[in-house]
Amino acid sequence: MRQEPAQPLEQLLTRVDTTLDAVGDAFPYVAEPESGTWTTTADGNWCGGHWVGLLWLAYENTDEERFRTAAKRATETVLGSVEPRSMFYGMNAHYCGFRAFDLTGEERFREIGIDGADRTVAYFHPRARQVPLGTQPIAAPASNFRGPAAEEGPSGDVLGAVDSVYTALTVLWRAVRETGDPVYRDTAISHADRALDWYLREDGSIWHHAEFDPDDGSRVRQYNELAYSDDTCWARGQGWAIAGFARAYEETGAERYLDALERTVRYYEQHAPADLVPYWDFEHPDAPDVPRDTSAAGLAAYGLTRLRESPETADLRETGEAILDSLVANYLTPTAPEDDRPPGMVVEGCYNGPAGYADEHELIWTDYYIAVALANRAGVVSF
Image 1: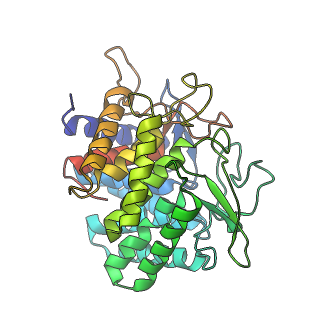
Image 2: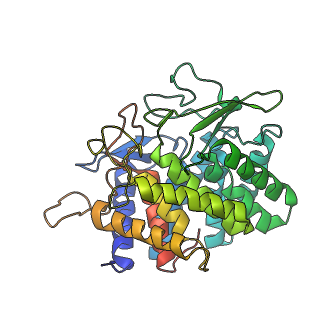
C-alpha cells in the first residue's frame, strides 16, 4: 500500500534538519548506515548542489530562514570550488541557480544558472559531440575515476561518461526556456544523440565510459569503470541514463529518446530484484550476496515519475512510482518498528562497488532525488 506523500517527505526533511545541525558549514557526503554519522567535504566536491537543493526544499516546505541562509552560504562555496571544466558544473549551477531563482525570484540566481549553461557549452567538444567527464577531482579512494585503473586512466578531457546525459544537460534545457537561445538546445541534442551511439547497448544496458580522440572526436574505446566488468552493467549509470533520456524526451518529444528510455527501463525491470532496487551491478555474478544501490533506484524513480502524463509514458510512470514506493517502504528509516536509526535516512546506497567504498551507505544525492520525487508527487515542486 502506498504511503501518503507527506509522511516520507517529512521524514526526509527531518533528516535535512538534523544534518544541518550536525555538519554546519560542511557538506554531507556519505553517512554510516548504522549511526547516520556523515562523512563530510569542505566544498561539496562534485555533488554539493544536491545539498543546496535539499536545503531549498526544506525552506520551501517549512519557511524556516535557517535553511535559506544555509542554502545561500553553501551556494557560494559550491560555485567557488566545483571545476567548470567538467560535466558536473552545469548540474550544480542548475540546482544552486535556477532552483533558487524559482523560489526567490532573485535575478542573481538566474544568472548563476545561465552561467552554468554557458560554461557547459564552452566545454562541449564539438567533434566528439560530448561534454567530457572533465577534471573535477572526486573524493573517494579511486580518486580520479578516469580509467579502468584509477591511477592510469585517460584524461577526463578526452573521456565521456554516461552520467553526463543527465548531469550536463539539465541546465541546458532550462537555459533554452529562459533565453530562447538555440545554442543551448543544439548542444543538448548533439550530446544526447551521441549518448545513444556511445553508451546504449542493444539490450538496453549501458556502457560507463567512452574515450575519444581529442583531434577528430572519434571513439577510441568503451569500457566500464564502476561496473563489475565490461560485460556487465553499472546500476547507477543505468539510473543516470534513465533520468537523462527521460528529460531529453520530455524536452523534445523525440521518438528516439522515448525508444532509448523504454529500452533502458525494460533492461532495468528485467534485471532488478523483485523490489526493483538493483545490486550495484545488475549482472554481478555473486548476487544476491552483493550490496544494493538505492541511488540507482532513486535516479530511475526521479526521472520516470516527473514525466508528463500521456499514453506513451503511462507504463514508464507506473514503473517509476513502483520503484519510489519500494524505496520508501523498504529503505527509508525507520525501516521497522525497532529501527532506532535517525529518521529519514535512505540506506543501502553504493557509491563505489569495485573499491568497496561507502557501499551500503546513505548518499546525499540519493536523498535529493527521492525527496524531489516525493515532492513532485505531492505537488510541491517540479525540478
